[in-house]
Image (cartoon, rainbow, N blue to C red; front, side, top):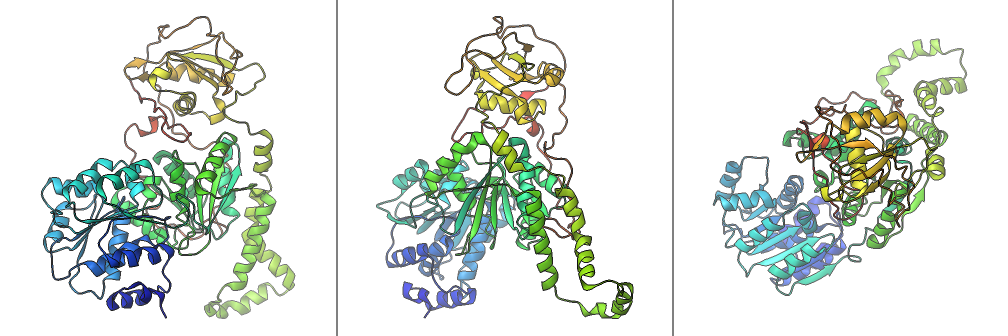
Length: 631
């Protein structure tokens, strides 16, 4: 007996469930559906991404809708276009045997007049993103003053994306007596505030522990040097030949660069971020769902709403600013009861974040070593052998077999196997036998980036007339200097931020670049001035290991300034091993088939976006430095 029959669902819904192949309800469905069917009530349901929340509110919503009334009776709000379309399609599948129920998706990037026209024809259920919905309300294109149900799906994601005011305005436009169902993976303060303001004695359902991670996802971290991050990503892909993954970066720029590098190195990859057009996003997602892309490199905002089955790995190329965001990332794998792996590539300075995440998700990370070249070669060789063993033979080759046998008649079976495998494998082993062991490097020489770097005494100490009053802390200034000067993360060190000025070190070979570029940058109309300091950075250190005291000859922010124009930085790449792995062949995530046109298209970058200083890598809100501009 199908267990959905015990939840009180109608025959038409059970028929649709049978068509969809659902056999047993998930925990959130089992808890929510009977309560929502029993009476009209407000509800808060806390459950991880991928636990079946859409069906948990979708089934009872469809059963409660009056199909004979063509007015809008329910509104579902979701954070992104992708999730909006996904929910719409699922609701349509659930209601396929319910005659007269119409569902309309309302989202940005599509014609607002066409969406308004579809609603006017009669839409009992509207699925919308908050921004577009608020726009339609302001224009008088939609009326939600008589709705009976409002669903907030992925509520914490919507609030993280800055939709708080839109949600408040939308809910204020709807009737007080409606039922509000709030579904969320976590319960931050903003979500609790929405619940308190707009819900009346809501029932609360919690699947697992609040904010905890899914039991079907294992968590691993790999400790590397910052400059080895990209090389580590490639090795992890090669060590998992059947990888089908989402790779998360913190910024659009990093997302595009990592995807481009992967494509250059022969991997089947693509970028997904906010600068892509809707057509580009649709093309990328279609290819990812069809598994033509094995590594989807995405920002958190762009990836929200991705619902793709059988994602094997989530790779945190960079950890998010907010701890709770990690939960959403890892929820992209281990869905529908299947096992998945969440990987974090981390530097020593970020290890504290791992501990913070463990406390939130109530699960432990397993520390692992980046596989060595020899280990990867062994994995790939066995993968190739199994691939050959399992391949289906196309008998069209039978015509050519006599000629092939003639060519190979003097070879033994062992020699044929060795040569056949070597055709594919030689390029691979030639690449990895020359590479170093990243794990031993990181364990032995990776330093905590919050500690001052020890040098041989030849480091150059600089004074610069920007500081905490310009919204810099030591980490954000370090990121700003690294981006502006196009240097590696370890090339800028001993950063010491005061109120109106700061100090930092580089090695001597970077001095000309530092002086030339920084002395021609303006920050909010004020020219940056940098000079070589007499202070060697060896003063006393505070509890964070940074220097305090010793001001380099008493220079202040009013020092001499050099006139000149802004020196443009060249487009930066990754300071990893530039020897790309072999592009041909079918190993790991590498793409042996021709790539479809358009996957490697660069999305147009907004002017000046490559000059925006990156946020601090610490969790929580940190001051964001203002953007430098050209003279």
